[in-house]
Structures are given as structure tokens and as C-alpha cells.
Length: 141
Image (cartoon, rainbow, N blue to C red; front, side, top):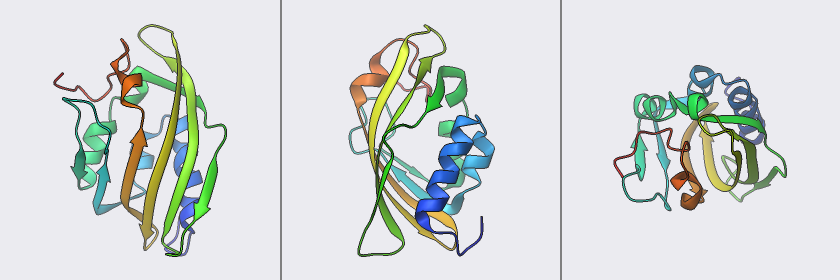
């Protein structure tokens, strides 16, 4: 991906990397000082990750817990800031530990500068990670 890649195209590429379980590749889309925020994080889960290293540590074990199959209903909205998009989507798959279905609705605000993600505010449903087998982040709850 180049510095001229649109935020929407970079985001779509990131989804393909997540489906391929290429977490290092997905983390590679981030700026070194990128920030990821979770306004609805349940108790014991991180609310803010600062820096590529923290984001990599958070996502490292994701594929061992959640087996993503698809991101249906993807809608990417442009904003008045050409660097920022708003994304609506679902992530579907299964929980590896239990085999139960995984179906999460997301809304994200994502900013890209110089071909790298610099900011990602992820509004996901905290109730979904309270199910057995969904805790990929090693929360303290």
C-alpha cells in the first residue's frame, strides 16, 4: 500500500488481511504512533492503545480465539476530512474454543495519513466478548 492509497482501500485491504489471519500484515498498516480507542470497552479491557507495538500485542492472539469468515454489510462513508472514514460492518465467524457462532456489528472512525492508519475508534458491542472463548485480549475481568 502506498502513501496515496485511499483510506477506504487501505481499510478493505486490512479486512482481507484479518480474514487471512495475517495479524503482522494488519499491524503493518499502522503508523508507529497510531492510536486505537474502544469507547465501549467492558471492565478489564483496554480503552486505549497507543503505538503500533501496543496494537500488535492486543491483536496477537486474535485468530486463536475468533475465526473470522467474512465482513458482510460493509459500508464505508467518506467524511468532510478526506483522511477520515466511518465504517459500518459485521464480522462473522466462530469462536475457536467453543465453536459457537461469532457475529459482531461494528462502527469505526478511522483516520489514515501517509498510507498508514493513525487513529481508529472502534465502537463494538462489549456484550459479545463476555461469552466464553471470546476473550482474545487477556482482559483482567
